[in-house]
Amino acid sequence: MVRIKSRWSKKDKTHTPEEIGGAMAFIIWKLAMNTMLSMENAQYKTDTQQDRLDIITEVLIFCMHLADRMTIERFDENERIEFMSGLANKCAKHLHDNMRDLGKEGEFKKPFIELMNARFADYASFAFDEDEGPSFVMSRFFGDQVKKVMKSEEDQ
Image 1 (cartoon, helix red, strand yellow):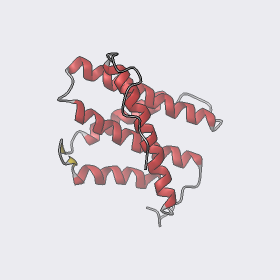
Image 2 (spheres, helix red, strand yellow):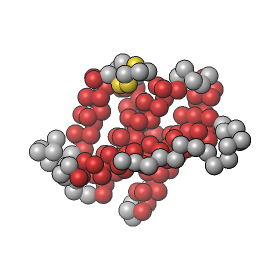
Image 3 (cartoon, helix red, strand yellow):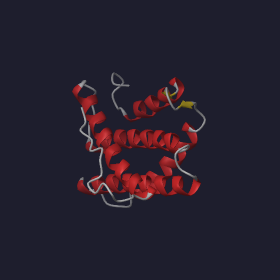
Image 4 (cartoon, helix red, strand yellow):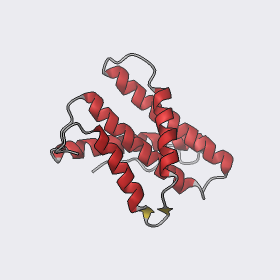
């Protein structure tokens, strides 16, 4: 179970779509971390921290795409761009910071954004229903992306 703060601390303040995207990025990051923990508790084996971050990356991108699909009707085009920019930049920063914490050198934001754009193009071809959520085919595609990260045939 993941605890998620669902209220802003300053109730009377209006938040920009970019700020909302940044807050959503934190929530999605927590969901991705919890997903990784649940997989390990279910005895799925990851060999390295990099494997874990690769799985977290796939979960982040999938959840980001779902957030984008859910906001299509709620934001106008400019607001949606602001929201997704805030979401993508904050998720990229969380990933970048964690890679740095592992002692990795280099730029991690750009490759993350490139992978996100590629995955979004893939996910865009699958059906999504506001009430039902992602189609079975979309969910299966997501599972296949996570499967590719898993090293052990048993875990695949």
